[in-house]
Image (tube, rainbow, N blue to C red; front, side, top):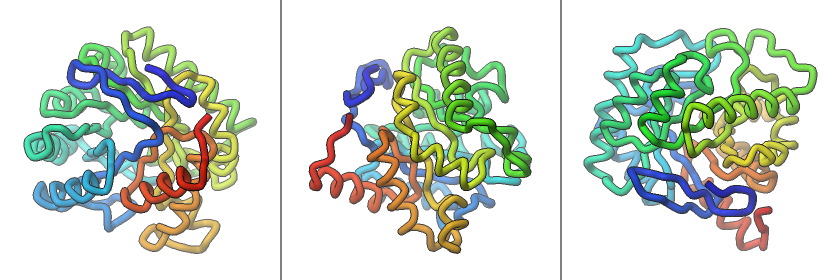
Length: 284
């Protein structure tokens, strides 16, 4: 894998695939309680229609999740998460065999089944800390792994997040987890600072401003800012009308070094990428 201003080269389904960042990952929520109601996919057919639109708009990845990780979310039983996610992964892989599918889960059994069903990437909000089987499972599956920082868990993370130095502490955490992933045998790793996961609005903006620091870890950096509270708390908006704020923050994330944007709205994110390139912006 190469990073910095270079392409991302990942092993996907047994072959090396090159991506020229920045790339966009479209979110497919299969939960009834996702914080952005319009993103909820009520059926396999609806997920397929949404995926088709995202791929047409230019999404490089589709991120499928069967368990909400919004602030205050209760843990979803394993069987329920499996029932929601696996049929959609299977259907996506059958309908769009060339699409790259990511499974958003912290559970090793769900990650394993999803990869068997057609997923090519595992996206774990817990960085392997909520299921100690995850890192060995991902290494055995030989797929890229996205690991995220979260203080606490989704149910408690926003109660009273505290840091001495938020950027330094998250940098140190992600560095340790990258080393753990590589020690487990995972070749391709990306990092996600976890905007909104156990962080105040001030913490989130500090991270966004210094996002480029994470490039020192030598892994692609994913930014998931889409329609989150850090936008709504400043603008007085709600997730349903936070698209303009999302585009502004996505643009800042790109300028500050993000390699992957994880979004609910692929077309506007792609427009931000295209306009920055037309402006003459160069990744570094």
